[in-house]
Length: 227
Image (cartoon, rainbow, N blue to C red; front, side):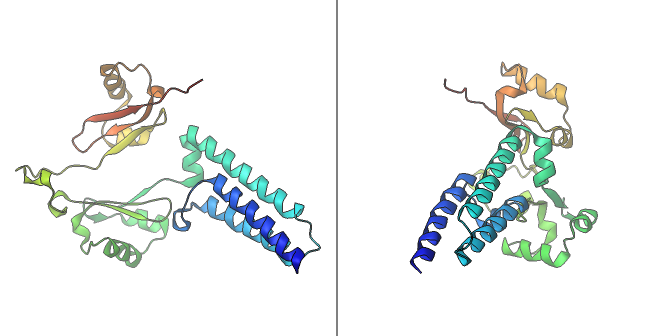
């Protein structure tokens, strides 16, 4: 019994630091590949706890290998937007200008009942009130209401009720998202002109940049690494 307790404590401490190294995520925010890693780790750990005949080495080594692999994939994803889209996918537009995108719903196998349930959870009961609704990679639904349906703010006291479009990111960690750039009616020449105005020669100098609600370019430069 004492040996079982000691093995359990050792595995608990090891798994604690292993999951801590993978980063902070709530269960509901895990990507599919991350959930798979968690399930495999839990399975290999359970086997070692259930049987004293199995050396702890047989659980610790696979767990460490999975964590290192996941960290390696995460580091690559920071640099490659194509690999990130392949592994994690990309957000899908389910509602655009108050209209449900039926082809996209069928492709993702999302039924209208689930969509309406998620909208109601956000206090939205009419699809026509939604300007955009995005299904995020983790399954959450992000909604952007039409200007006339948004809660009143101090800025709304100004007599200007023009419909604003949601901000669109076009540069992420020095990499230009061509699809997002085209979706807002711009091209690479426009982006180069905007960067030139700010004295920036290459998008690689940008950490994050995009187009705000008013159609203006915003950005934040990458911090230089300290040597």
